[in-house]
Amino acid sequence: MSGAGHLVDAFLEMMSAERGAAQNTIAAYGRDLADYSEYLATRGTSARNANREDVVGYLDSLRSELSPSSAARRLSALRQFHRFLCADGVRADDPTRIVATPKARRGLPKVLSVAEVDKLLSLADAEANTADASPAKQAMALRLYVMLELLYATGLRVSELVGLKRAAVMRDASFLTVIGKGSKERVVPVNDRARDAIKAYVATLPPGPWLFPASGESGHLERQVFARDLKALSGRAGIGASRVTPHVLRHAFASHLLAGGADLRVVQVLLGHADISTTQIYTHVLDEKLRTLVETHHPLAEGTEP
Image 1 (cartoon, rainbow, N blue to C red):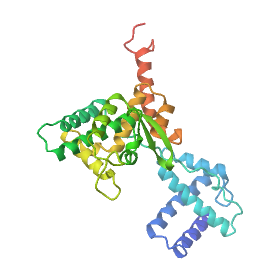
Image 2: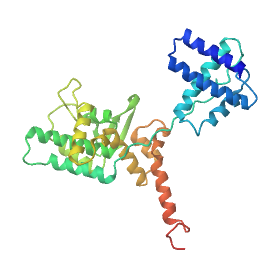
Image 3: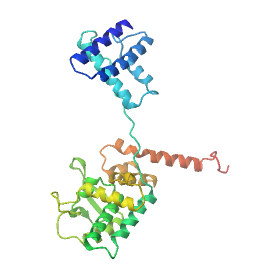
Image 4: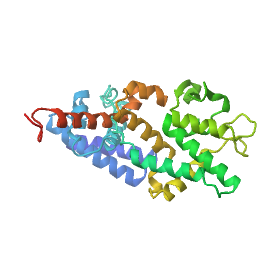
């Protein structure tokens, strides 16, 4: 590996002298490129004449060892190395130029169970209707209950929720007009329970444009205030505060809809996702449902009658 080692050494010297790379970075590049050079040697080639298939083959060989994010960092080192070889005239082309970066798998969203969401809603409803609470405290409790009902009923982003205007409530509160990302407008249906909560709540509000008014600069409740109140409620409900955020309730809305038989495209529209690939993070719910259906109804599944 003397020739390859010479090229790697020259690259590392450049990284140190010209780019001021840290010693730990240089050492990591050295290990990565030594591993790459050894792989190329097993294929009877070297960095001087490796092609795209060699680079892809190397990355494929790492799948069982590295996570997608680590493999992507490894590819970044290879790209910088091959660009250096091109700039130095060692070779005329860069075999890494059209190699796709390994994509990190998106983690499954945190989701509350239907029973846990019901527990939150029941407690919020009870606190909103406490007779001996002060008017100010009861008003805050009612606001929290309505926001929670609305969030779980619609799957709104928290920014969309707190920024709702009173004019967004349409057709006897059965629909909401929502301005989402990129100022895109969508109409979201509201279930009967959330609709009744909104109608009762709006009747208590003073005149003004916002559905959830506050005294701050924006004129409406800040998302951080809602998130704080929601965590406090989850603590009182005996659910770990770290598990409950506005975004977790958005996940619960989507996951529970899919588990109940909703179409993925419908959920995409309701969530305001521009691309179906964003909504596909919830397909684990569909996968589990299909597995349960097969285990329950397949004639050869264990425990079923022939």
